[in-house]
Length: 585
Image (tube, rainbow, N blue to C red; front, top):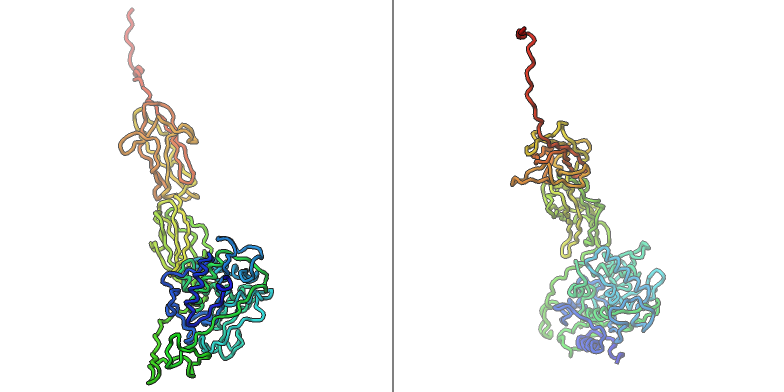
């Protein structure tokens, strides 16, 4: 039964029926079946998938719609659902992944996660494509550096059933100076590799035959156009951009589900190489129609009978051939050098400033492309959020700055508001899946490191009366007047202000009721503060008033409550010129 289910599928008139039967059998055996996105090209409509492998057009496909292996996964699940791939070398070689190949897939996943985390590239998708494209680099036949030996080449893309792609690399990658061929474990055509090639193993070369280089290039290619591969629709689009075939998508999806459930590592060179790739879909001969009964030509040629149908109207006796339905243009993935990859902090330090002051630090970000290099001309929008009153220079809450040639964009300076507290600055760049950075910032209250009375006059009041002289103090910070500093005034029993006093002098609130603590006091532009009127109750004695500033400076002032001293009128002294009265005899 297993051998029957694992039969190799071929393209042709019966491809869809055979694939459906195989997937149904896999589902019945509880093997992981491919799940296609609703409304995706996996609906079975070749046109929806952009499938046109015999048309001579690649639609920007990474492989040029080259042949691929159509083997389906084994019926036996490699391990229980949710298991990792870090399992011992056990099980069939067909189900395992060669050690170097598996390491390359995982390295590519980690690298892309740092430069394009919102893509959420899974290594299992690379493994599925690598299985279908080259049988995991011909069963892991790679050298110590991960380079396939001998190199892996697809057939010449000469229009004979597959795309017609004339040479683009002078044979540098594929050894063919007439037509292009898909190259390496991930089967890139030379023109695509020229844009997406990577050096993932650090040897200074971008080699499509190196599994590390090819796996990373494939990962970045799949993530192009702001795709999120955790979404089924985006994953389907990514796979179809690799090879525009509905059957290709079904096969990759089957292996992807299989590897998600777990696999095992096998030694390099011991993997099983699929033996039969997909076959080209031959074009119908003029005058024979295109139904299943039309005998296919074994070697269709656009220049001979049996080749590509004429794009124009059929001639008399031509069998009713009509012009092909034009396909909408398919956007090509943007090369990684121009693809926005990540947004990073460009060295912005702590954002702190005193109320009303300018921040010393400025928010700066770095934009990188899909290969981690600085990316210029990226618009970055900076936004201030919070209720401290902080704004960018010019009084704006939102500004947009483009990155320079070094990939950095720096926001204008921040001007702190008058309210102490925390706020955030958010930097956003990119469309489709924008990248966002958020910076925390703090506005601290204005501070003073010293406070003192402006005079030394004694402060005295009679019981039940108010103090005739006002209390005036001045706050300074680093010997300069400290304007706008919050000051707290409290009647206390000790000079350290540990115990508040509930009798003696007091202030009055807005309703005229006695209060012995004020917290709404602020120094003026000259750093001075004139306290409200102070009243005495009926208790005589010496009391303490403690003033404390934001920043920890303090001063203690004595207040005396005592009754005025009573004074007795003195008798006038006798006049020395007055003549004393006569003394009687």
